Amino acid sequence: MRPFRIRLTLILMIMIGISMVGAGITMAQVFKKSHISALEENMIREIKLLSRTFDFRPDDGESAISYYTQQSRDLAALTDSRVTFIAKDGTVIGDSESDPKHMDNHSKREEIVDAVQKGSGYAIRYSSTLKEDMLYVAVPVISGGNYDGFIRLSVSLASVDEGVRKGWTLMAGGLAILFAVAALVSYRVAAGLTSPLEKITRVAGRITRLEYDARVNMQRKDEIGELAKAINGMADSLQNQLQTIRDNEDLLQSVLDNMTSGILLVDAEGSIALINPAAEKMLHVTSGQLSGRSFHELKQYYELTRLIKDGITEREVIHQERILYQPEETILRLDGVPMFGDEQSFKGMLFLLQDVTAIRRLENMRSEFVANVSHELKTPVAAVKGFAETLLGGGVKDEETARSFLQIIYDESERLNRLISDILDLSKIESKRSPMDYAPVHLASFCASIMDTISTVAKKKKITLTSDIPEELFVEADEDKLRQILINLLSNAVSYTQDGGKVELTVQDRQDAEGAEKVLIKIVDTGIGIPKKDQPRIFERFYRVDKGRSRSSGGTGLGLSIVKHLVEQHHGEISVESELGLGTTFTVELPMLQE
Image (cartoon, one colour):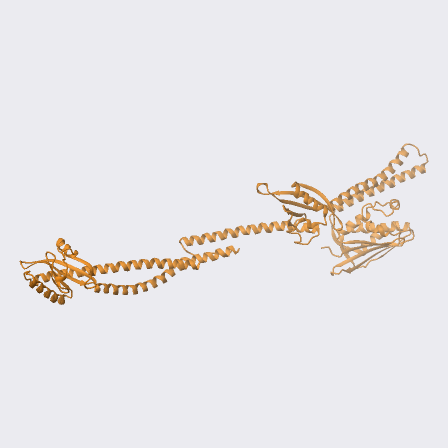
């Protein structure tokens, strides 16, 4: 912006200088012309005065020339000018500077011609005699019969030129002062014009550097003020648009970051343009590790890279599932769609990754559950049907045998009823349709009532039941569900403990590593124990260590699965320790206070 200010100042100074020089020349010409015009008028008046007061003598040859020459010299001394007497025919008869005899005929001189035509004449020309410019003024004079000719006065223009030179000197000084003032004013004017433009340019530069809060602080009513308003309006618009873009980007980034499904965008060249955290987690890569790199970097997932390559090559919609090992088995569903830009130019493939491992596992579990339920229901139903058909057919005549058949039918129907009840309970628990009703539970009295319930069965097998529960201990829990947990565990302990064995229930409190209060409930028996290989699976539905023994004890295979779900609903944990032939210990850890 500084060069423009200087250029504008120079332009203004040149224009002012040209104007001032033109004005000076014009003034000098006017001064010179007015000075010469004044000289002419003075010289005409002098000639006319001279014609009235001069003593003219007749023209009689040599004596006239001598007379007029002498008179011209005397008059020249008085008038400070050259005096010339010229006859009507143009012959010079007297001159104050030169000898008339050697002078040319002046009839053709400009001032003489004009004097004849106009009554007076003047001319400016270079005098070869005096070697300078001269002003010649001639007036015709008639004095009776003595003189009929012209009197011519001439003066040097050196004085006029000297006056013009002095005028030029004074004018040059004044012009120099005016020019300096004009230069200062021009610079100030240029600065006044360019300074707002510099401010606007600086603000525009800040906007270019993405400082969209920059504004032009200027209150003007002219075009520069309108430009400042336009710049501010543009900055407001850009700031609003940028904020909208940032909000949209933040929203999009938030959506991508919080999606449970993975997003993978591969451009037409095979580079990964976008990958969200969910996809990084599924593919076990760190943040930013794949962005901008080729999808072939996922070479450990051969099936996945081949599918991506097929999508980019064929440019068709893809719906596939692939099994990845990371190292555990993971089933990923990939939905890919090709992306096209203007004029149907291919931009790449967008893949949606979904971890369907749990879904497929649930589907398998559902299938297994249906098969197990069908099998478990089929056994008692078949027994009931078989014995009922035998009785209805009249094949049993003995009353004792018939009674034993009816007892079997009754036992199987009870077993069928328990199985259906457990299935319904498990279904309600797993579907979260069984709300928790937390309340303080006094564990000593609560466990005493449960031990009384179990004691009847234990006495039949001569199993010793013992308990160790602090009197002051309370826990916040759903009483019905806690009862179901303990009854299931104690019933299993009694069922799988041989006659004369021992079952012990102990309760104690403790603090975990974070200082939270916990309640530990342990059920210890001296029963047959659980093999090591079966312990990780005993909480699965319908899983039995000894299927024949379980059915004979009336178990449904769902009890421990129900217990595990109920413990988890209490935000607790259950674990098992067992030695084959020595007994089993189930440990339930529950928070003392529910959050």
